[in-house]
Image 1 (cartoon, one colour):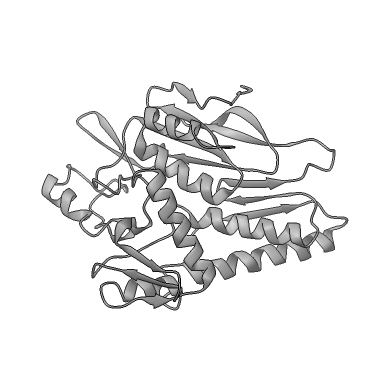
Image 2 (tube, rainbow, N blue to C red):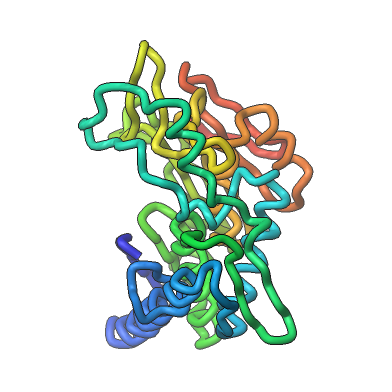
Length: 298
């Protein structure tokens, strides 16, 4: 998945711990083989190859993941969309861009994006992308899903506590050996070497999405590497979103969605969802939180 995974488990000894960690690593590798759009042998690649041609029968697990992703697209009014992979890559965040892309090119870049064109057939467990050249990708949900599956497997095997850290997507269960809650540091996006808060996380996931490392600036305005799949334009006004949720998959997807939806709509949507909380930091450094969250600043 192009991401680093760190697995921490509470075990009776190092040998037992290593066995559990190997189980988690194998499960993460299994998920990658299923959902990677870079692997030509994956079912996801098969779906993309047959866009506009025919439906592709897939494992129930992948079918269910796509179905949930479409559900999040509906919840977020299209701010989250796994067909974002169809976008033409006209924005570059490697320092090579010297001017804004043309409005016409931006509009054309999202012509094949649209979760409404992902057709699912429950009876045949098949997925069909209606438009030729259309693609799906799990970049904004895959890490979280893999972390959830690894956590679930380890709990099933009797591991009492641990953390799956998927490049900053934290998924915890149980307690530290001393009985204390796991605590997650929330990065200060204005100084990424410092944390501004420590948050206790018990049997839940926390995901932070930030644009403080990848962005471009034109006419004094900063454009994030997170692009609105509906318009083709990068998001502005937010530099960091942290989401707390029971599952990393959902936290992952919502963190990206809130960037696109913006502060007011994002907070309003989160406040309507049970057991979901978020912290948003805007481009002025101001902190905005959902209704039921308390920050212990450090």
